[in-house]
Amino acid sequence: MKIRHHTLQIQTSGAPEFIDITDQVRAAVTATEIKNGSVAITSQHTTAAIRINENEHGFQEDWKELIAKFAPANAYYRHNDGSIRTENIDCDDDRCTKNGHSHCQHMLLGTSETLPVMAGKLKLGRWQRIFLVELCSPRTREVVLTIIGE
Image (cartoon, rainbow, N blue to C red; front, side, top):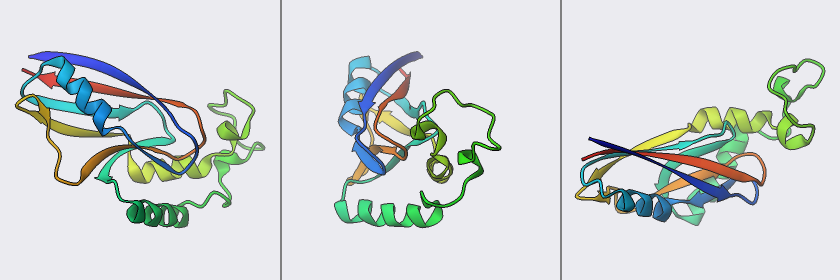
């Protein structure tokens, strides 16, 4: 059994944003020479999710409208309220202190996906693509791949 790790650095440009990372994940899996196993794809952030869906513009626009209804950016969030929030503050700008909606949206989406590796290839359905979903603001994001198998 082999275990390999690989980290992707992804630059985002805004939110909400779908960034297709399928080809980067596929290349990392191929480079390991693992023939059969799985790959876990994990965001290292609480405001950027990993999801699998199709790369279709209409769906992405529909999703943006839907997620904004569940956790709108302009709603009141205790997370954004400087008079009560005292935890996990490491910067003074709005991307760190006014992103309660991004955290709530992330809870609906999730941090990771796991996919099979078969015959040395990432196994995806016909329309499936892997996305890093930026929910907060432009920055560099880290996605860790853990590839396990033989």
